[in-house]
Length: 242
Image (cartoon, rainbow, N blue to C red; front, side, top):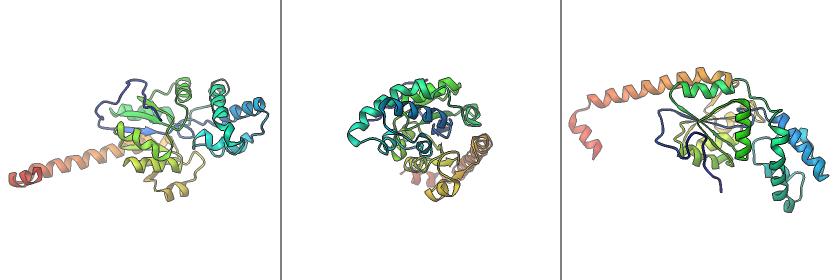
């Protein structure tokens, strides 16, 4: 069962004006070099061939789905545990941030919002990546993939979820959040749009400008609604409350 956790608070408080969720692999970080090194080390230790170059073209789904290409089903739980143990040694240092990743997180926070990371990755390893790169979200939740991400997104009150995979689109839609995508992972723009992405940006460098416009639009809509409510006769307002 997935566990909810955060770096700056152990449980989400009342949702702020703006909460934006982010995927990790191939959204905030280019994990291909690190994951390739980890698979090569796992292959050498187990004596089982793993085409690491092929494996890193399928990043996004849970580790166990990739291991199923290379190991018998009965071995997968133990091999997955061993991979996760080896991962910090081989995968953290070679993995860079995606262009604009740090600035995207900071853009949310500069608007008075909360930036959370919701990922399928083993949460301790997700934390290591972000700490190594100096990226500081307000919360990190691991072990969630596709629609399962919706629980964390709803709990933290996320209005927007940013990801690179059709699974991220599904998670956003299941949570009732706006799906913002970047085609920096295995899914090209047409595939993301076909899956139902609301927005496709070239990469995260475009997010701060898009986010500022999104907030302006939301605030304008709220102002119009407030003005309309103020102009309603008291009997109409009373009827609404009933």
